[in-house]
Length: 485
Image 1 (tube, rainbow, N blue to C red):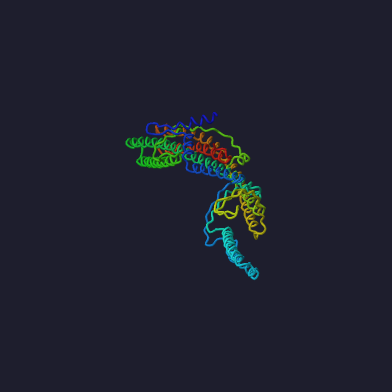
Image 2 (cartoon, rainbow, N blue to C red):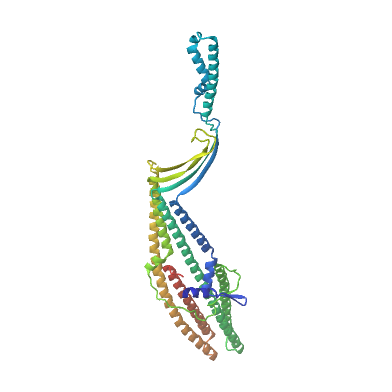
């Protein structure tokens, strides 16, 4: 909680001082994390992975779908053939002719009135039967040229060969991969912002150093010019000092240009206009505050924290689950089905020209029998990809172990160099003081003073480099251990 509160307070330290904005390392980090495009992309990728995981969870649940359609055909389905239709259409006439052919000879012995009555009755019966046959034939018509159909279908997976379980594990690994990728981008962003920040601080201190050196050689140049006028120094001495003044001015110009470009890079990383005037909190300090850290090459800590290793492990897990999904292609699959179907015309009460439906429940089983080894080849390919990911992870572990040990060594060396630089500063300051004193007394030449000034400049520059190296080596160690926060 204290660290979070401190981060919030430090992030709010960015403020405008006159026409310049004052920034410290934490405020630069906060702005970089907030405005970095790669971080924004990583957040979107995490949202995508979360939605893919949620989608995979739905595969366990029943799915309901609705179907509907219309079809027109040039012919209708006919249950009766043409002969049967003709027989039904002439049912009465055929029966009348059969009766007459059978009883005709016997009807001649009947009275005329009875014969007439029999003929009339047979004619009426034939007409009735013909009409009934026609009705029966019409009743057998399906009228399927215009067919309407619809259905509501429910499917519930029961066993899919382990494909759904593997798919969900694959989605979980994908979500973890997106989170680890975001962490890797976050650490990379912090690493780059730290590098740019301390680069600006280093150049600003070197700019002040260059200005101090320029002032020294200008003062020396003025003294030598006075001595030339008094005849105690030669023109050659004056030219030598003038050359040093020109060199100091050129160095001042170079470091000023480098500082301007470095501030542009820092502004771009922070997401602020590159031409905005900024001042860093450590720019005006005489000595950079360095905390000596005892380096510990804890490789196990790096294994637990480095997002790169976690990402490679995610790739291995995803490869295994992809293999399981492919293996499911050779296993039986069982689904429960249910639904309601309607059609027009329907056959649930004869052939009716109206919508009617029926409920249904069933079990669907799919058993692969032969696929020419297609699934086996895909499984082998997936296993090969998993093997590659495993080897890449092992290679990354070896490189990270080397990186951790190198970073720990660099921290130790940076601490030693800083102590040596501080000792050199004391000797250079004393050397410059005695040289100036001797020059003012006339016992030391201007060449000796310039040598002392050059040694002082070199010692001061080495001290600045050593302080920055301490900062950057500690950042490198944190990056190698995966603890950059």
